[in-house]
Image (tube, rainbow, N blue to C red):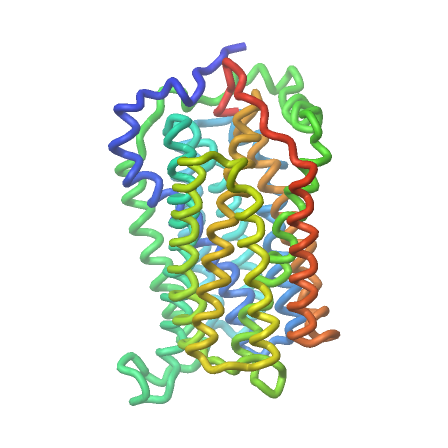
Length: 444
């Protein structure tokens, strides 16, 4: 069996100049498809009059490909290079976005929108597997940790392009003529078709740019095919579940952001539903500014600050304060549901909450990265961890709409705050990740 070089042996002089271009491009491309799926299954369906229960179930069920990606992550390890998988996945995602743009304006818009989102979700989940493995191969260990905040921020920058760009554009295009400079009075399906089509074009251009700048790490190689016959897939899973105190790690993965995952699918319904229905009555354009632009800029700042702080003082000195920053600002949503403030105040609430989430979520991702690096099968183990993160999000979000319909938005947000306390308590049992093996197969 061939032992590959660890990522720390990557030529740092060669990797450093490309990191400032490579990491942002990789993770904007990772973020855009996810947020396109969320915008289509969440904001678009809400704007078309769907009930919160339908929105919660559809948007959560569409996260299943990200949750189930560990099932086919070994295929990415065993066949082809991570670079090839990354580029092939971008082609598939671009095609799926083009189909989605058409679907929003078709007669069977609900069925075709869901079908296109399914295709896009599978393409995006495959990209995630390859992208995270490629990241660990293309950058040395120190840069991996330094750029965690940047990659999380750029992942969220994909949300600006989608929610702050495409969603806001859809709202502007369908406005009453003369109300906005871009208002052409399009019907809502037509406006969404144009907006998602514009997003697909931006995605395609970024994918072309990635194909040009993406380096070819010497250790980006498929595992020997003979390992398929020697039980490599079972060994990868067995090695994961046999890690020390894996039960505590699983509690952390599943519950650290459980409350936040329940909150996320209901943000668009909360912002768009009328005040009589307990919402805030924002337009799609106002939501694009408040949640898709101001909120994401705050999230980017929080993510970059979190990555910088961890790189300076270490994860374990930051973990508890960062966990509090994730969950405490959710109290502001409960206040907003009670007070129903104006759009400007809502933007401030969203900005504070998103900054705290971006800051604290960095600790979560750095822990999963360090946990994976301590394994012989880092890419697959990271995919398993992020897949379990997806399972948590699915379990939390699928019934969030039904809970809102039963309790109302205000009591729902207080429930989210309580679940956040559960997430913080998981830190009491969390072990420090093992030191990386001397010869870690980071591509596997």
